[in-house]
Amino acid sequence: MADEIRLAFAHPSERAIATEGEAPRDRISLRDHVREVEIGAFQAERGHTQRVRFDVVVEVAPAGGLPDDDVDRILSYDRVTEAISAELAAERVNLLETLAERIAERILLEPQAMRAFVRIEKLDRGPGALGVEIVRTRRDFGAHLNEVAQTRPHPRIVYLSNAAIASDAVSGWIDGFAAQSAPLILCVGLPDVARPQAAHPLAQRRVDLLAIEQNGWVLAARDPRCKVVATRTELDWAMKNGQICIWAPSKIVLDATQGPASQPRDSVALASWFAGLMEACELVVIGETPPADSPVPSRAVTVGNS
Image (cartoon, rainbow, N blue to C red; front, side, top):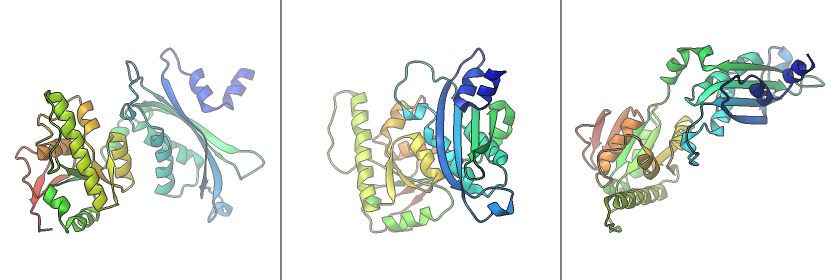
């Protein structure tokens, strides 16, 4: 009994260990994350913020094999704090139980997450901490998780030719696309300068991908709103937070299990492959011609037109 009482008040990480069963999983944890929140059913709690502490443990499916230090292959800590921030921003809630349930559901949308322990405590409502703790698994939400996952954003991929990058209209194009509802990701191709030539095709592929990324930095210098981004994790974060991205292709292309059939020198085809990977709502090609076999709806914009 004494041990049961101790576990009842232990950190969620200890609870996770004690209830892991015969198939232990990896865990990530967030401890003592304190936010100022307006929450509560009492009238005295309306119109005022109070300190709320979050402790979260997420059990994840093992990645398998030796770790390769790849942020895209793990459940990022940012996803846990983003789940908290997103639910706090969604609407005011009365009950900690409601908030905990929504945070657990959002975390379990991530494919690596298997079980989530969420503890939330109010720190300013009494002499101690007043709170709730819940445990949820993917099975608890059933098909609803798939329905929610289908609401994830579908970005607009915009490819800019070198003529488009150099055009005085480039900021206007970015303004127009950024004002639309879909998240905006920009793609570029090889720069109009000589680049190193390698004897082996795989080496040349890497050289060309890096040259595309250098061209992305040229575009970023034209408009400080645009950030060069290399990983899927960063892209997902940017889409959720309204950040305009320029895709740096090396990492995603080289890590892809079903990579593009085209070579980097066919950069419009590369952008088209990326649009399919991201389940884009549209591919817009400025200054060149979209591929006929684009996996998403595509259209061309002539340099000089908007």
